Image (tube, rainbow, N blue to C red; front, side):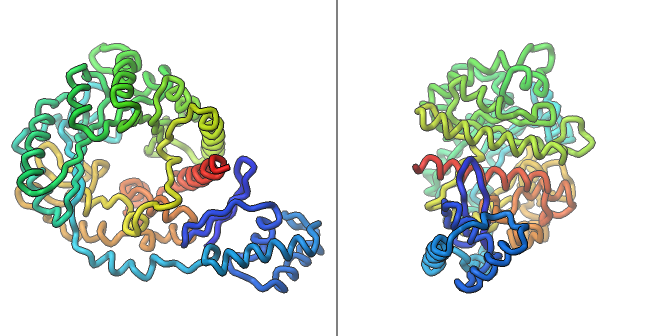
Length: 464
């Protein structure tokens, strides 16, 4: 499977199965487009090119010389012989082995607080309460969760725990108690915990910053970008004032105190700010080096939801952003944009390429009252409750469905060039829009494909 596209003046060819990326000239690009996903003989290529020339309807250059075509063909043939073009799928034959692997837990999302001091319009968690009642996780429940994780982690040494909400700093004493308990478990069971925390920043103070810098491997700092965008969708409660004005000085302090590493400022763009590249660049201009601004996922009837008619604008915004990142990086003032970060040399392992985040199996979420869900976005969806900390997994059928879900169980992924980059996409988004974790959220897929194309273009531009 081969994907060709043009971006920012680059002719890019992706061999999907091998992961090989090629930047080619116009002749190779056009001749390759004649091959229709298969290696042809030189005679067949000339026949197709001549046919295109004769009918006058070709979208390729029809004035190439015989020498130019032969030279381009030889380059393509060399890549084919080196197994870097038109390669066989090396992953599908091993998918059964992945399905039969034992389930080993490696990551927990601890819902330390089902309450929030913001009232974000787009919050999938129902203003932090997950369509239920307000609740705070007790130390006892959190302790059970960490014990459960260790007991189900097999021989895996490195484990990850994200303190999530709602707003976890509303229950920060329990966060600290659980980190202390985790450190005890490390010594007892020869494990290493990587703790992370996601916050809206309102309650963060200097003591919290000092603690997070000591104990949190990563912190996610929620802010949508420009002041008017952030305050419109992320209003405070109880007349606290502008969230943007409150959190920005704190976020700058966190970023600098962590040497511009091990954090993300993380935003959401909606139908209200389709020009989201301006929000990303606003954050970069403020000095942040690690930035993630992602599309809202919302029901179509929500006024802020991304619509299909918004896609041309959003695809162009990614192009604008990618070109600006290239420019700034070459000027020595670049920054990382999460969705453009692709490793073309090593990349994720086969399991990650095929099964993604591992939700429902390698990764689960725990509520304040101890219920177990496949991930944070399923919390509150009763039919997706896997079990609880006292009784363990009660719905093995659901867990097995997640375990066996991969890019080959999703029909819409079959012919998608981005499938080994997004691993089939988000199971929760698929379920919410199609009723199946093996479905696909169409708008999300379109945006993901564009992000992959832009990310590869950036690599090509910076390799010059």
